[in-house]
Image (tube, rainbow, N blue to C red; front, side, top):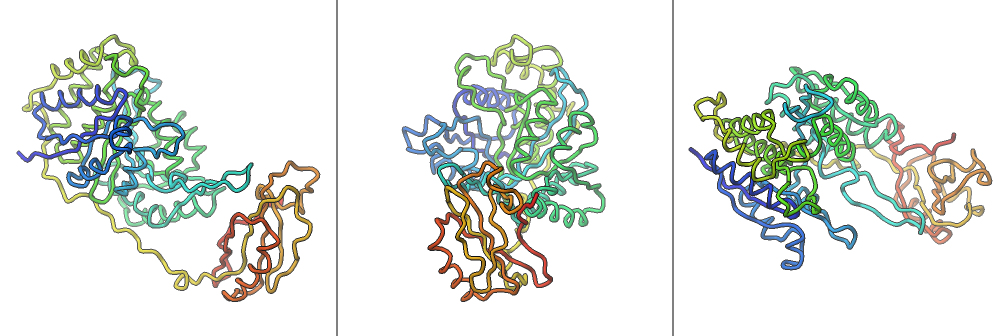
Length: 465
């Protein structure tokens, strides 16, 4: 039997306790996994000067698969989230969060079976933020065509591999017309390559309502990062909470599995932590490795234990972590009773990343510029015309001042002046206009405005009502 070396990061808080539970269960089940210990979390900060040392990243590079316990990220102080750092280091673009009802775990539903696939490294989680004025902080929401296509294609591949029937795109393209519009455009194009699967899309606010009212309408869901973060926790609530919610992070050739709950430092060391989510994450990892028989044995033992009433306190029982772990081990079915078969691991998942497109090839033409600037009062001396550029609007919070008098509004000290030309601008003409305008404004950001050769504006309008 093939065996696999997996990086094990125990984490901090309750992480070491629930990780030990998994290690003991795997040993009792004779799962063909060898653990290579690596470290991340608060304990590493003093010793290595980093929450996630380079040696830990190197271990993941070597083994390509990791099981990671919960870790604590200090609030403030400039420390980057360990989870985000690992996802970006290995471009783990798909966060896979199964939500499946577990008999014996009390919840409002008993028939949930949804797989949520969340884009994992773009969106607001790119972490591109700036102070624009003392009153205005800006966070950029980055949605790219290659990033969207990668996670959407993975969602369809996963649905086909698991015999699922439908993939649903969740978005907010009615408001975020360019960013979510791009995500939805990619979804519709890729859906055509999978005629054996149903596909549809839904606005994120409606999706949240439908998940509560009619969760059976969903099968596989694919979402941009921020919406996926929120909706995945909602799905966890449908099956009993984060304590029973597993998760995996998939990239091209790498995978890191983790429970999605926090490190719960308030109960660390008390022996009462619930390892269910971490065990299910480890089961998800076994399936990723093709060890389906081992995964089924462990998951069956876990489910039988919960149905029999042996639960940790957070699930309404009175078992401590050790008692719960021992019960699962005692309930492991004989290997002969397991229907699933182990399979050789296929080539690690890879999806072709779309190459970047050159502006000239796309036929994008520069037709203007947005000046974002800091001012305490609405500007009154902006030139109406600078070369070929004409001032078309001054806005605050995205609304043109001309249609909503400043005297009737609460204004931020951050304004936008939009200058647009009738015809495409040369670089020399644009630079000349910038040199004329820049000294007159305490500008914070300059944004080039594009139009296609067919006349389509590639920038959002300024609201006029």
